[in-house]
Length: 272
Ligand SMILES: C[S@@+](CC[C@H](N)C(=O)[O-])C[C@H]1O[C@@H](n2cnc3c(N)ncnc32)[C@H](O)[C@@H]1O
Image 1: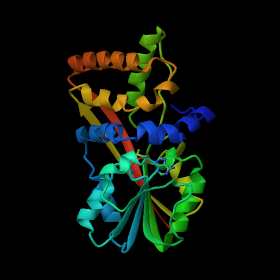
Image 2: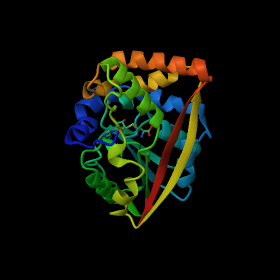
Image 3: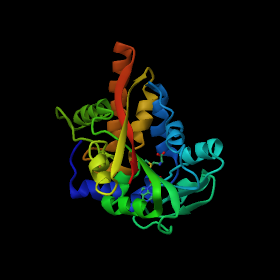
Image 4: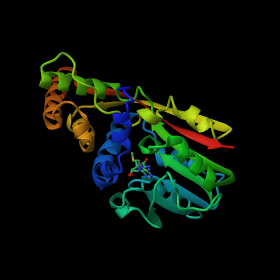
């Protein structure tokens, strides 16, 4: 969906929803991350970040580090780096190797030029003032340091949006139901270069297209259900829509053997 109303922005940036529900634990985030095991080609995302940090020495801050997927890999592959995980949700930091701190990208508790790289992976779309958070990333990174952001395209997983609209339509008895909330729309792969380019002289976009093919509806249903923190933002009963989506998906897989989802995500590597 492309509705970027004030309501949409308020919902995807709401601290009570983010820290208190969506990312209180990593349950819903893990459901979204795990769907990629059925993607072709498979991208080693933490490995790509390790590769981009090959010239980086010193300290790296992972802002909005979530369940620490990237920190854990960096700890293994680059034990020489000093890593710091920051997130607005205390709960999601539980399993992240320290040091970690609860912090908001809007005002990072770090001195200017105190890190050599900052990561902001799939998180800037949750920040109320995106240009303000990008300025913060710029402020904390040293002169020759880099910032790596990531996000999804507006076209990412369009089949899931379509499935939701079909299911919601059937629940409401209309041809096509209301769109589900888009988490990444405020900082999509299409918008990100311009926003980052306001601050960084060089912004390299690495696009990662792929196709997910599943023969079992459940991983897709788990991905869809991971939006439950925003259930109230959908003008249709959430659980009932999920139930209907499961039936549609099961019938599709029975008939075609698989359900395919096209994906487009990417990294933006920024320097001065
Ligand atoms: C989609 S998850 C991404 C987690 C991780 N970076 C990854 O790519 O796997 C977004 C994370 O950003 C955090 N977050 C949201 N708004 C934030 C903010 N203003 N400052 C810091 N973290 C924030 C959330 O709590 C959540 O853990």
